[in-house]
Structures are given as C-alpha cells and as structure tokens.
Length: 166
Image (cartoon, rainbow, N blue to C red; front, side, top):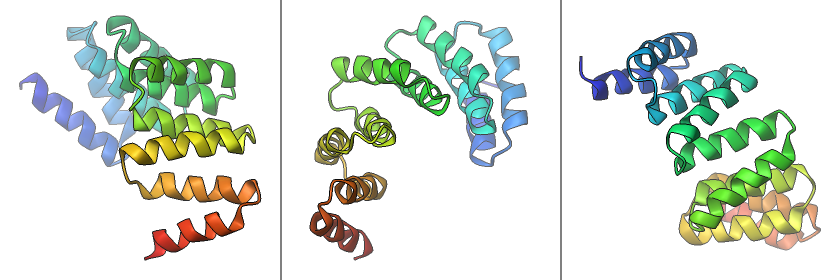
C-alpha cells in the first residue's frame, strides 16, 4: 500500500477517535520512514487526543526537528505545552510561527486562547481580530465574544453572539 493511502487511513482513524490504532499504524510507518515529519505530527495528534501530552510533545518535537518549518507541528506542540500549563514554552512557539507566518490564523487563534487562559483578554481580542481578518470562523468569533465580555464590553460581545446565531 502506498504512503498516501496509509496516511489517509491514519487520518481517518484519528477522525473516528480510534487513537490507539492510529498510533500503532504511525509507529509502523515511522519504523520505515523515521524522519518523516508529517507522520510524527500525526502520531502526536493521536497521543494529544488521548491525553498523553508528554508523549505527544515528543512526537511534535521530532516532527519539528525533521522539518524545522513545520508550522502545524509547532502549533500542535504549543497546544500540548499550553495543556500542560507550560505557558512560556507555548507562547514562544506561537510567536515563532507568527514571526515566520503572520497570517497563520490557527496560531493566532490558539495564541489568543492562551492569552484568554492567562486572563489577558485585551491581548486575546487583538489576536482574534487579526485571525478574523484572515478567515471567518465561528469558534474564533465565540472566543472574541467571551474576551469582550471579560473586559466589560457587553454590547460588542452581544453583537458577535447575535451574528453567530443568525
């Protein structure tokens, strides 16, 4: 079976939340292609979804080692760090991504989520607004509404919620 088909199978296993089998298949592929960044990232995603954040961080780290400009792996590693309450490491990675790709809306959104977790709502608002200039996304809009609410801008928050519900 060709590589693309095997990767599709792993992606479908992750979508189906069959993480153990996805990890098993990733490890088989990694044994044949030990420096493939994409496969390491997929394995990290499955481990992250299982809640095994330290191991997910290892796989994301390897993905970045093999492909230093793998922004998806960096973003995923930052998310694992955030979930492990390693906020400084998480922030450094989001900033590293945005330094190279200021239009990476996933990094902008996740960095905004980090700022929101740290009760830095004004910073979160700025990041969400930047992300929304790039893409329209209900999740980002909702996060923006929450941040506005937390800084006391209830009217703006309500406008966004109404927009989401339309």
